[in-house]
Amino acid sequence: MADKMRAAIFLEPGRIVLGEKPIPAVGPLDALIRITTTTICGTDIHILKGEYPVASGLTIGHEPVGVIEKLGSAVAGYQEGQRVIAGAITPSGWSNASLDGCHSQCGRDTPHGFKAIGGWRFGNTIDGAQAEYLLVPDAIANLAPIPDGLSDEQVLMCPDILSTGFGGAEAGKIRIGDTVVIFAQGPIGLCATAGARLMGAAEIIAVESVPERAAISRRMGADHVVDFTREDPVSAIMKITRGRGTDVAIEALGRQQTFEWALRSIRPGGTLSSLGVYSEDLSIPLDAFAAGLGDHRIVTTLCPGGKERMRRLMATVASGRVDTSTLVTHHFGLDDIETAYDLFGHQRDGVLKVAIRP
Image (tube, rainbow, N blue to C red; front, side):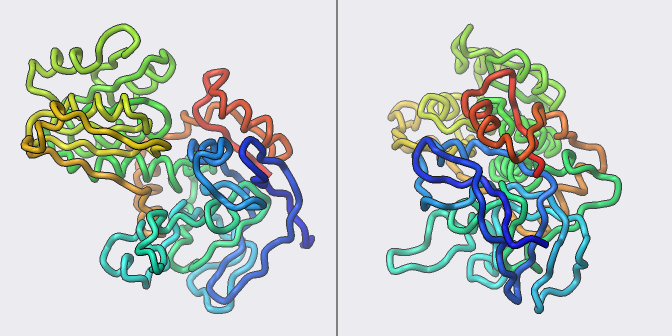
């Protein structure tokens, strides 16, 4: 094996370039995986724009599919050559947060309190997946073998997009018979739509203006698609629900407007489940918040990670109950990563997700 690899490296806001780095050394608890497929996330675009700060020189990306190249001396239960994924969130398994059942918040205690970034390390605090090789920390807690018969593209959404979308539905505590609205049908919103259906929602409303995404939304489980460019979405939602409002609203874009629409669309006692990554302060309108007297719940979700989460997601894909391979609309080699960022960042050519193959 060579001692150098190609990687997508963040240099400064506006510049992510393909460069060369040493292949990581493997510690006792680590695993080195050879990346076979990865992708670009909306969070990577926040990094590119300078809206989310990371260190210059960091390899970006947090959605790995690959093959185990080398195992650390203390890693048991896996074999070199095995196809695996690892979640975007990589809990240690032994931290206070992990042992308390909140694996996604498995960060480190600091003098300033608990880090909000939680267990998101790939492409955030350590080198990420848009490279030929990836070092996976705490490998026993994070490597999930890919079931036989599943392709890279079928499991590519599991590390982040599917886990996050389902997480929004789960955090909203959707019950059988609920009415649910999902704001924005990008990849995460589409997975939230699929998650709402799986959790038993009786009526699902999607808010989306792009016809291609609206069509996929219906395939994922939406009963109604509201085009916010043609009508006021809150009024449309109230008409569909006969003035009752929705039991759960999932905000999957990360903007003030969609957050406010989501809050205005829920019934008294309803839940706003927020999935967006916000780059500006949010304000809560007094009337929509019922002055704090509406028994509303506002919950946030960081993509759940760890090998058991990944196993459950891949089992759901293998069962045929959800198909996320249709979300992959474009394919690039790692050599074309800068072109892929330009396409994805500007949302051209109907792009949903791109597959990057080293």
